Image (cartoon, rainbow, N blue to C red; front, top):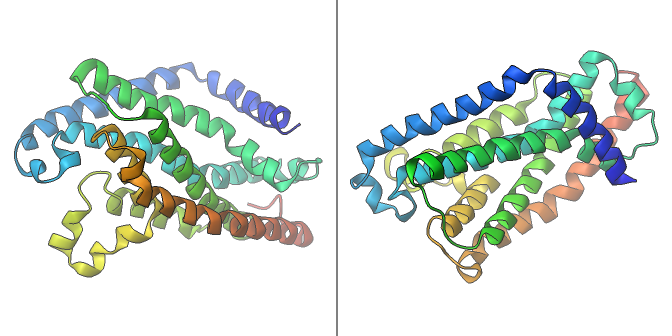
Length: 271
C-alpha cells in the first residue's frame, strides 16, 4: 500500500515535469557547464597546495563528488518543506491530508520525485567527470551508497523539521538557510575543512564536527577517492547512525504535532 501511494505521487510529479521538455535538456547542459568550469579551475591548483590533502590531490574529483552529494543533501532537507508550500499555495494540502494517508507515507511520497530528479542530476556530475575529464573512482561503491543513504536520511529528518515549521508558520523557515549555507560552506564541499581552523580560527574550525553532511561527504570521498575500506571509515559511519537514531523519532513526532495544530487552527490552506 505504501509503495502504491508513493508511486501515485511520483507519477503525478513526473507528468508535470515532462510537460517542460526544454528544462530537462537545460539541466543537463548546466551540469556539463559546471563540471567543465571546475575542470579548468582545478588545473590552477593541481600539484600545488592541494597535494597537502589526500582527497584534494585531484581537485576536480573532490569538487564534482562534493556537488553530486550536495544535491542529495539539499534535497534531503528541502524537498518536503517545498512540497508542503506547493500544496499550500495550490490549495490542495487540506484535501491531501484528509485522505487516509499516514504521516510517514506523506513524508516519503511527497519527497519521492525530488529524489528521482536528484539521482539523475548527481549521476550527471560523476558521469561527465569520468567521460570528458578522465576522473576515476575507486573503492567499494556499495559502501559509498550506504554513506549517501544514511546522510540523506539524516538530512531528511531535518527536512521534516523544516516542513513542520512551514506547516505552522508558512514562511520564514530558518532550517533551509542555515543548513543550506552550512552544508555548502562548512562541510568541505568546495575546500578542505582543515583550512577553517588554519585561517578562520579554532571556533569556526569546530563547526564541521556538528554537521552530519561533514561525516557523509568525508566518508564518501574516503571510499571513492582514497579507496578506503569499511574498517577505515567506521567512525563517520557511526556518527551518522547516531544522528539518525536521535533525529528520526524526534522529527516525526514534531511533524505530527504540526499537522494536528494546523488542522485544529484551520490553517492548512493558508499560505
